[in-house]
Image 1 (spheres, rainbow, N blue to C red):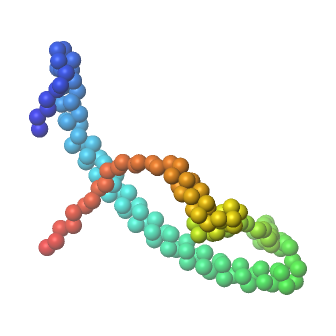
Image 2: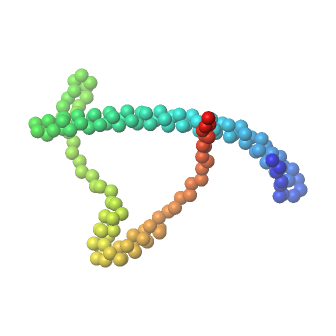
Image 3: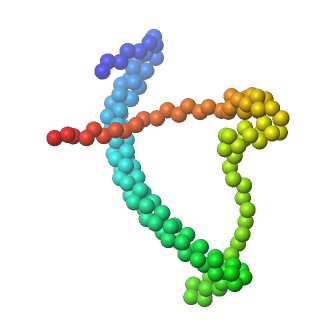
Length: 147
């Protein structure tokens, strides 16, 4: 690789030396980065396996919770003390609001503004004001050897 500097005078030698040092460091940086990417890929595979196990546990717990809550509601039980683990099981009920989908938002804004055209303009205005972020990154792709 050849490096040319656009600076003039004494700064050119310093800049050229800095650029040469950057190029000399590049192979070491790339090999470290590649190693970390491979380790990351292995960890992601482990994460997938663990996530699958967690999903299985969640399904089993959800089925058991339905049975336990049914019994607690039927018998008006608000809490159960678990002496073996020095803990309690509490039955709680709370309400939350569902997220607003795009179609629902349009429907509700149209109802409020009494005009679907005005609602579409308003939602378009909000979309245009939404911030856009640009994210640049490197991607490590391992070439598979085909034999």
